[in-house]
Image (cartoon, rainbow, N blue to C red; front, side):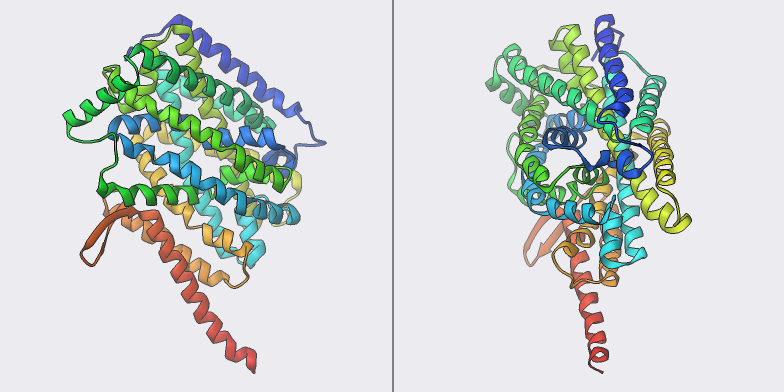
Length: 493
């Protein structure tokens, strides 16, 4: 892949980056509230977003720049196994349809801003609230860092090397997010998603015609996998359970992240969320088409330093400079939207479930908004420092752990929406076992999120997050039953 500066591609990139920057600052006047000095307004857009805004916002922070880069890269490397993202983004939406409107109503009725607020309101436990909030923050940090990985791939293809271009982009993002809050990524998401749709549709329509058709694309990919002795166009039988459990676990974890919950809480009604659960699978179709670019990389005979370069290299090699610049700007903007929402989600958690809970319980609405704004800046700087000073693999390992960690908040957050049987001590014990047990299993497997399970003579590999979640639920139920039995005699006296 050529890494020299192309004037035409760079000019197109700068144009669209400036466009979304202007939109980011203008966003503070879009649907302007009486004041942005309130966490509901700054951090949740006034809970006023309708179907289309929510669709672009949730899609924008769910299908990220790293998704655009990493999914084709995974397919390029391992083949069919990389398509696990498709079933998981199908399974997740029935869960969203059933659960998220109930969670949204609970948050709206009681003024909750975060998952930690919901848990504290349900169980009255500061310990459980802190566990859920801390898990959300530490699971989000590497996710933000990975958006920078996606942006770095686009900047590298433009010939922009080093940390300065990345730092400038993130400083601009930090400033307009500080100014406009959630309204900024919500407005920019319109541009970002339309650009991504154009890029992907153009790619899957035109690239195969330049590579001899889809039959040749699949044949070239199959030959490449056979030549290197790993990867395949179809799943091997020993991958079935791992593939299925990874998809299911990822689906359950997806809407436990602070950034996706922020998009849910910002909706104006439960019906808006249900409509989005019906409409968002359009992004899954887009993701499936995007994944095919991994196979096209083999057919194009690309010489890559990293699998993450496959998408930029395809556009650089097979499209005119102006469209390559358009594609790279779409990828870079695709990093800004989710990074902004993620930093806002993490800032909301810190403000409501640490600062207000432990530092200043009497903080005013304006004080809350100010703390959230400053925290969002700190979170972005932290993510930038991770990418600059630590190996990319560190962020990747933490992100894999992040999915397992955030999945352990599901019992505390979701079970209380439907039953009052569970109590905080049991859920906290379950979270502890799931969080630290899952971390140990990943470490024991060489920092891989899959674990070998043996039942009798049968062995199979499955997603560690589901194993940890199962242990979490069993421990929570056991501790809750034990406490209920101890309390029963006292209740009878």
